[in-house]
Amino acid sequence: MSVSTSELSIGRYTFDVRRAGDQGEAVILLHGFPETSHMWVPLMAALETAGYQSAAADQRGYSQGARPADVSDYAYSELAADVIGLADALGYQRFHLIGHDHGAGLGWLVTRLYSDRVISWTAMSVPHIDAFGQAIASDSEQSEKSQYIQFFQQQGAAEAAFAEDDYALLKSVWDKSGEAQVQEYMRVFQQDGALTGALNWYRGSMSADSPRQPIGMITNPTLMIWGNQDQAIGRTGIDATPALISGYYRLVELDVGHWLIQEAEGPVVDAVLTHLKTFSGP
Image (cartoon, rainbow, N blue to C red; front, side, top):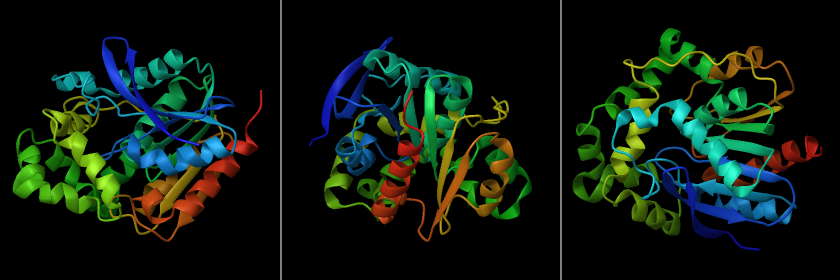
């Protein structure tokens, strides 16, 4: 049982991709900010043991060979195409999809646009992005929690703040991660352009200059995992999510914060495996 890393060309970019397992139904995992595909290693190992094959890329902006400079290259439509490109390159006609943080925000769109490709969908931390957007606009608690987004959109200033004093601010975000994971994250974020590439997700897909269109109803079986101590995601968007899902929906609420795998690996793995097994098959 092992998780391997290799490069994979998708269109004009080359992605660093972690993979585990070589048989069984496929699972694609989408990481968030400020992490890499390394966050998924414990879950990928569990998936392999349970009979699944999985893949998790260091996404656009994070992989050294997939780090375009233009903010427009980080529109959600471009990022969603990367996910389908990954599936096609690996021969995954249909797959289970799992996303955390910004990867969850993207996963909602992928599930909506490519519903015929997605067997089941698991969102971690971030609720349906229509519900989340409405919560930011109308709920004072969520608006307060989301103030950081405006700062992240400040080109140059955000990068300088994260890199100051030997990346002290960035390292402080990883207070739930072990030393090996922090070192792996730093290996990526210290590369030229990596911080800008990662922050461009907030500039290309969440900016006021390019407002996101609602994605509407989700029909795929959906698992939502949320920590009720999440410093970035309040309850309002979580509560509004079921109305935007016409099929199966289950919420797993944990007494933890935002970094779900690092804080509650066992319950997260159990919930994901139960969801996948429930909806596995033709």
